[in-house]
Image 1 (cartoon, rainbow, N blue to C red):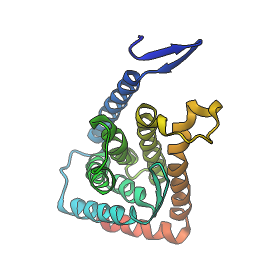
Image 2: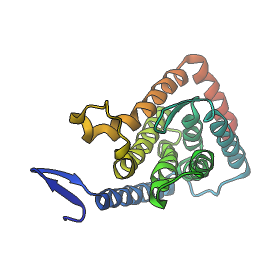
Image 3: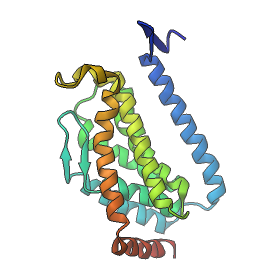
Image 4: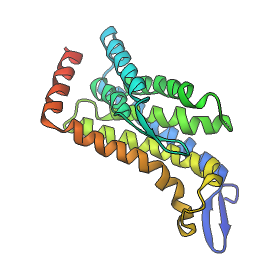
Length: 224
């Protein structure tokens, strides 16, 4: 137990090994859930149309990720880049969603992380695990309100991996002006600040009647 939990002055907190174990557990839960859901959704193989739409969504996500407001210590609010990845999962299910999201994680690493990193596990938390989590939106494939629910879940799980990576690797970069009494939640506040802001703005936009109508037309084309 002491390898995973630290105790000081009567307070308990996860150690670095504890956070790593938590990430491994989260990944296992994601994979098992995705496997079970994919079996229920469809046994069909990925076809050419799915690949084409996934490629378009991947390109749009990558381009819009450059249109952003960037935070000083990493992370940014982009022009709806997460949405395009989640939308593919909503259209075609969790298998296509996770594959597209994993491809996006590689592009994100090449875009912002390939020149500076601390450890392989830090790269996984900040890039491969975090952005691949957006594909979990596919669990709510074609369900009522599935796009909204899937997008929210994808964003929240992405933030969870960033937060865990923050606790392990980035706490020394906490600014001096941040209240010491809130040190324990610094990584949560920092990482979810930009993710939730983009998520809320995106949800408002995609639920506007003209945008909803356009998305339904795209869905009809993608599934025809």
